[in-house]
Amino acid sequence: MLTSTEHESLAESRNGGKNQSLFPTTSVCVVGLGYIGLPTASILASKGYQVSGVDVREDVVETINRGEIHIEEPDLDVLVKAVVANNRLKAIREPQPADIFIICVPTPFTSDHRPDLSYVEKASRAIQPHVKPGNLIILESTSPPQTTADVVAKHAIPDGLTIGKDIFVAHCPERVLPGRILIEAVENDRVVGGLTAACTRKAKAFYDTFVTGDVLGTTAVSAELTKLVENSFRDVNIAFANELSILCDKFESDAWEIIKLANRHPRVNILTPGPGVGGHCISVDPWFLVDAAPELTPLIRTAREVNESKPHHVVEKVVKLSRQFNEPVIGCLGLTYKADVDDLRESPSLEITRELHQRGIGEVLACDPLISSKQFSEFPLHSLDEILRRATLIVLLTDHREFLEISPAILHEKVVVDTRGIWR
Ligand code: SAJ
Image (tube, rainbow, N blue to C red; front, side):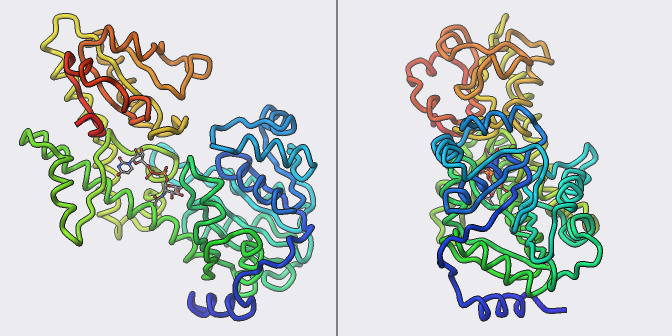
């Protein structure tokens, strides 16, 4: 069994660094056209690959084949329109034969924080009838350790094909920041981990045709762990900032001032407190490590529990402050999980607004510049102007750039809970 270092040196030596040769007319089948799959398929199509994008949602397939998009990501609409128009990208419902298969499907977790790998298994089984000798199969979905071997290799490879000889399988986790995906998918360093050294080489050669960052070879399980470790590191550090903010509430101190002062230390870099941790990555990935080794991950688990408890802390703070009004009108600004993206998944801002509605402590008004009443009907949405006019208590939950411009004179007349520290 080769070590990660041997994998990496083999991948580098045989491949000789960046493979910026002519973009091949290789065909690629991308399974899953969400926040990662559609940008990935579009970038590959723009680099000269013939790309088929697979999605089970008929409306998504139809939208893309019209040259339009179903998600919010800067510049993606222009790119999809162009590659669909020049027939380099076509959306389909079922996989078809290709030289390279990339699986970009969701890997959520269940209510008891167990990984749900059913989408990965379903995608692996769906491509299996089309897999031929010489194909490269890549899992990009963030997954628990051993998923590439135990799920993809198990269900995607036809009988009789030998991994590393007839067929090549690797894991290459994405690490793009929503809102910068088209930039970071190309410029960020990537980790590629094969089930054998030959798989690592094959995957690295592919990513080297369009990634301008370094493509670093390792084993599949190391690539799976690297991704989970990146996001767990961030979650632990956000939990520290959130615990600090709760501590500062007790001592009626300004957490953001203390962080600013502490970060002047040359080796201290405390992150920013918020209302909790949302998104389908940071709030999910650490649980994959906890599930894989619960007895070995007390810190990662505790950080998750701190971040998951932050929304309740915010709700209790608002409830307590609302008692000063006979008829409180609470204005919640922001529903998405972070600034300037339209993603509601695991959003603490939505969770807090929902809980305030349920507590029935007064009228709750809510707005988010990126969420419209057409796409969201759980509770009524209001205009920012109406909220600033009517609310007696303002709760800043998502720091969209539009909220940065609210006049301090208006806020001065209100009771304000600024969970992001943007109005200090
Ligand atoms: N947050 C804070 N305080 C901070 C930073 C973030 O409260 O100082 C909150 C955000 O408001 C948000 C949540 O944490 O609710 C996650 O935000 P994020 O920007 O850290 O995470 P994502 O999910 O948008 O992107 C992360 C990135 N991973 C890392 O930064 C290590 C990105 O590079 C990954 O590719 C992405 O997860 C992913 O897809 O895994």
